[in-house]
Image 1: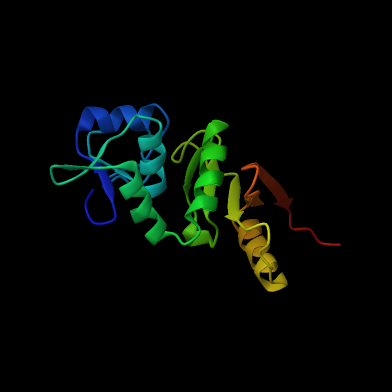
Image 2: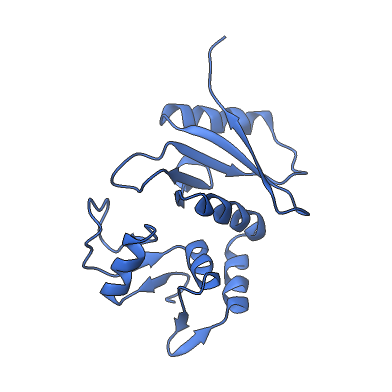
Length: 175
C-alpha cells in the first residue's frame, strides 16, 4: 500500500490478477488491449479489500502486513458509504462482471460484460441507501449523463438487513 493506493509490483502476479478477473489498472497503460501486461497493477481500495477477503491478496505497508480490519478502516475513511458500496461491488463481481469507478460520470461504478479496452461499459451504477431521499434533479442529471454516454443507468439499493441488492433501471425517453 502506498498512501491510499494498493499496487502490485510483482509483474507476474499483476498479470495474473489482470488476466483472471480484470482487476486493477496497469500503471501507465490507458486502455490495455491484451492481458500480457509488463507493468505494476494499481488496485482500487474496493478491489483490494474484495481480493483480501477472497484470500487472493495480502496488503503490506512497508514490511508490515495490513489486516482486513485495518484495511476496512482505511477504506471506510475514504468512502462514507463503504458498506453499501462494497455490497454492490461484491454483488456485481459475483455475477461475473468487471467493475470500475465511474466518478467521471457522476456514478459509483461502470460495469463491463468483459473488460475495459475490449468494450465500452454498458452500465453505470449509482448506489443509493434504501432510506435515502432522492432529489428529482439528481435523478434527471444521472439520467442525462448516462444517456449522453450511451449507458444504461442502474440505481443499486442494498437492503441493510438481508444484504440483498435491488436494481432499478432508469432509461431516458422522449414522450
